[in-house]
Image (cartoon, rainbow, N blue to C red):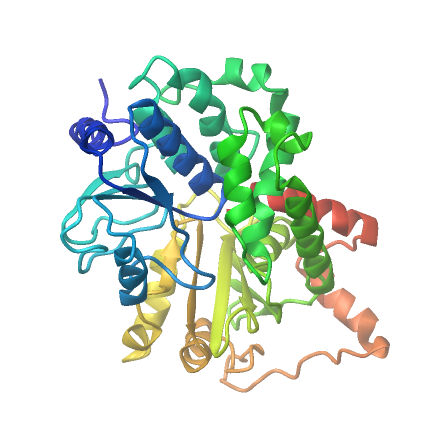
Length: 428
């Protein structure tokens, strides 16, 4: 049997960790990521621990713009007096323990080969095809109790749709989940549920309490889509808010790096819409040298630039693998001291979908390393700043011509809104 969805010894150890945590009687804290994949993985572990007899389970979410690998997170988690901690889909990095002295299990699929000290790890990264964290949780848990298959199979599908989209192929080594998909309303119901679940984390408020309870109480994506559980109205309002923010910002024209390999869109929004806009533009732009699209959000957090990058669908040399994390790190390395200034929240995520949260000063230097000036304007071959196209109505024809050269086609407002919904389903 191949090592899928992770190292099989690690999988067995993770199962023992879950059984022991449930039987020990102490408080168990779940720390899932806020997206559909993380929430579904968290719900799977919650159902599993409950089925195994655990009665003292708490859940903690990383605040907006933060990550779990900080002293602030350690302080917040310490207040729970936990006997066990399970971290799901949070991304991993080397460093001190997340919660010193507390048995910790990390389930993840993000690109990393180093992990916090004292943690037990089951990581899908490097085990192709890479499973989502929710699918990893399903494989880990579904046979630990006779009642679990029915409770958690649909969660494994839902979280996978959240990260990989509804076109995922359930071929070996992936488990055959087509029966669960049919039983719970088909791909449409799952995709609609993903769109609702992913919305609250993207709002400026980032309130996760309602959506977590909805996922935890639901027995099917139908329960969420058909409003059979509490909290769906708030999720719908959150989706409407996110859609409005996307439509405000999605038409910002891109600038291109001096060599044409990077398209940069600059926005200002308190909502986490930069990944959605990057996903939309990466399907639209073409260019003989274009490799990826990068969206920089200057208003998501004070004194920070949060950015997301996605590989261009019509990029040059599509058969040659492109690793965004490696590309960002290589660019930063050309400016002495920049890697250190960018810090640990730079170039995180996946090879195909990366980003970061960095200081404004660090981002300006990164832009120059990528072929832009500090304001995001294209640098010419001699280092001179190219004059940007004016943004008034008289320049529309010139701006459109520039975009057309890169394969962008005009969209009507209705098509733009339609694209937003699709992006919301597929984006991480």
